[in-house]
View 1 (tube, helix red, strand yellow):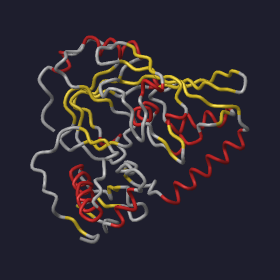
View 2 (cartoon, rainbow, N blue to C red):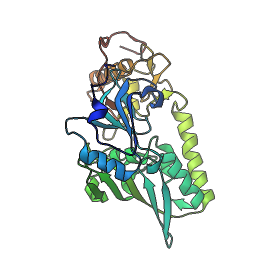
View 3 (cartoon, rainbow, N blue to C red):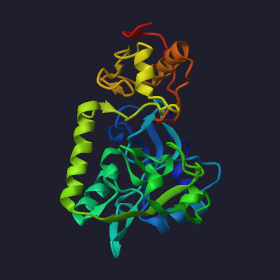
Length: 321
């Protein structure tokens, strides 16, 4: 990555959190690839984050980085400031109103952690979160879901800061949820949400969660360096079936490969670059379009700058041409 912009941290407002220059992101990204953040900011709490957003220079780009799932950091790294929420944004608690539960969650909380809290507390309706990689904030932004349920079904209220640090409260109607999408502005940062659940026997919840986890283990390459589902399902279709039909199962570019187990997953076999993974994904899109007439849309977010001297989309091996 290019050297950090001269004096970037000196241009940023004073915070109670932490600034780290030239912070590596590959170790915390699920793909284990990509360049560094020019500056990483870890806010102390919501007030610290709001103050930073209100007072930062407007010409400095901001990128939110969650758990590192469902994202591909390009080899040239991410310019400006990358924000990663700290433990202050991972707190969760449950309020009961009769048999109805309001689950208050921080946007930095892992989806699987929230699912397990609900199981242990006898809160049903949120079991699907055990099948969603990432954090609550990311799940809100993309209306994440699994096994017939999604955030649109359970969100009561969300709280975010806009790019000026003003607090915004959103209802499900404000969110404009659709399949793997919300209308929340790209530069808003979610900090918390209230989710709807109901009273349920913990053993029943545990059984449902175990079934989801078993199904994922059987059908997805979970124990690999992957980023989750690569492409969204086109209306009425399955992305993996289109990819398989186009002969892309097992297609390889450098250290990147289309999973043999579930071909809507890209895998870093150990030596891939971000360029390998993105180039392989684009080749899959090209072949699917050529074979089926369908244009696949990326579900994985690709962020940052391309590295210098990247190879072309050549170098592909395997699969049917």
